[in-house]
Amino acid sequence: MNETTRPVRFLDPGKSETDASDGDWSRLADARRLAVDTEADAFHRYFEKVCLIQLSVEDADYLYDPLERGLVPSLRNILADEGRTLVLHGGDYDVRSLKQSFGLTLGTLFDTALAAQFLGMKNTGLKAVLEAELGVVIDKGEQRSDWAQRPLSDAQVAYAREDTMHLLPLATVLERRLGDVGRLHWHREECALLRQREPTEKAFDPEAWRKVKGASDLAAAGRRALRAAFVWREQAARDADKPPFRIARNDQLLRLSRAIDKRGPRILARLKALEFLPKDIDRAALGHAIADGLGGPDPGERRRPSPSGTPRAAHSPASKERLARLRAERTTWARDLGMDPGFLVSSAVLDQVSRVSPASLDQLASVTGMTSWRIEAVGSRIMETLRL
Image (cartoon, rainbow, N blue to C red; front, side):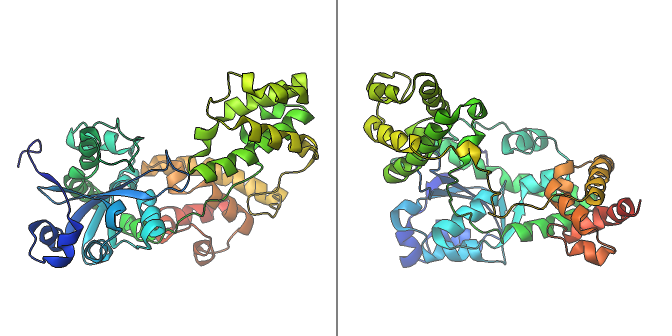
């Protein structure tokens, strides 16, 4: 079928339960390989959710609206069935989002982005991989659309279907190439790990203001102000169900903090006149929050804890030297395998290996992140490097 005329249809959740002979649902239930993608509203909401599920078979594309009735049992069973293969591209977000929104663990996965990484492609985004492998050009212009709006625009529908309509032929090409280079079992292992990923709980770090470019140049008053503004913005974002940057951008809060450093607290009385702040921001509430923050301790005098809450132990001279050797050798391993060094073995995994200094491949395999395929690919070379 010509891809310009192949149908795209919205699935009727009612028919999935009342009419087992419905053609659309039957085709999905019978498919042994199914392309899947999701769209969420993280760019527009604080509490993000899955707003659209796209599915494709060989000659038709389907859109399912979970905002209407959630995830109906028929679709849940289709997506959870380990007897069929679900083809995704960069499926980490989809896996986590579907678990977060619906408590759904997907069935057997084939991730085309992971396949591209195992094949050593430099750019593994869907647009780049489709152009390189199939000569297909897609439009990513609706990537930051508000997917919770209804009705969806024609542009959104066209964008959404393109995210899955080419995945099945792409998977066929990439699967054959993985087999040719003997890495298909590596890919299967990584996809099995992918389906087990868990949602990441949204947690606010009150020290995140330190990461703002220019924050380190602030004086004590500016530091107090920026920290207070960050805490206030987070609560305002939760209350409004908007991403924090839609309340106020980092650069706007930094500019205000710099003004406080320069002019002192009296500038808070002029918040209504500051044109660089968003027009719809609650300036009175922001002013009160900063005023309270200015009366607190200087956050610059406190050592920032590690994300886990426990300071990470410093490397010993020996482990530091091992880490340097491992990083240097990783470049050679990656070049020999034609893979990205960070994907082959991440810096975090090398850090653990350098600290543990395993004496055998079995001990190396016990390091978190040293999967079976990584042991096969570079396990012996890691051990040789540690013995130098």
